[in-house]
Image (tube, rainbow, N blue to C red; front, side):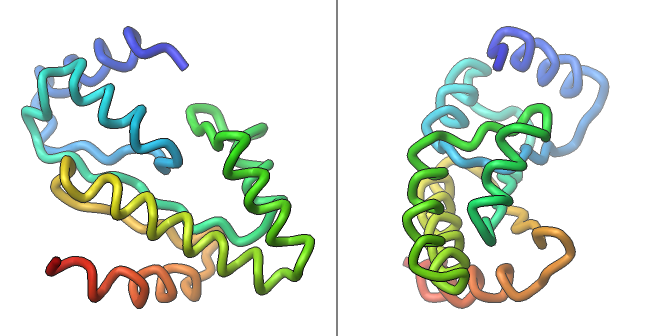
Length: 137
């Protein structure tokens, strides 16, 4: 929410000896790319957080209740439309969004960390199945 503060905090961490950095879950890859442009590219390896959404409720919870995480309205709407069809459709949409984020960030980060939402590993496994063929492309 405050890019200048985030840039300064990142520089502080690097100066303090951080060997790598892990982001909060990324839902807007273009913001992460702009951040990296602001620091002149990462001076340490950067691991992007990817969070496969499991429902509209989880998207709204992250947006409204978790400081530092922003879920854009366009993604909340995608989750709303999917959940209107079924909870399975919402889970599949969350995996699709995670795959899209992976595709968008993989060119400018050194790795990804796929979070297990609320301790559920099934969405992580689904994302890994989705991206496994893409990693070598």
